[in-house]
Length: 134
Image (cartoon, rainbow, N blue to C red; front, top):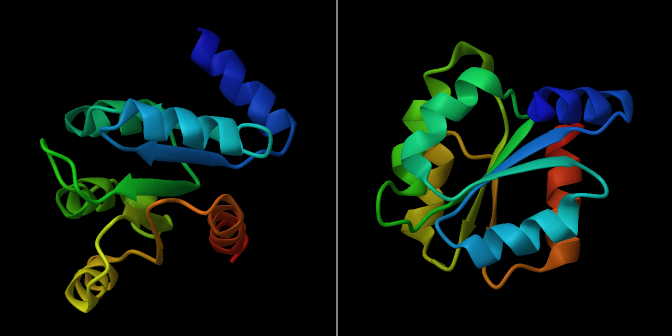
């Protein structure tokens, strides 16, 4: 009930919905603090629960950590894309990996961008804004 009210309040304020998935609760807290004034930010620290969450939530953009123990960001991409409403939803990877192979695979899977860790708040906000408004 509270989640529905929160979504309605965010929609009334014209806020886009962002879903951040990362196994680090600290990273999710930081993202929430950075983005909550501008976006309706939702977080998930257990990537295995993404299907259940997406049955109830329709994000305008995903922030996916790449390196997680249960499911990687690459593993999550086909799950997200299996929802018709998310076939084209922008996905930005959050990663400490800085290899050409990573970026090639991420792009091939349908990611629109990436942010390397440690996260630069200004760059993150620029990229989110760019992809939500494109």
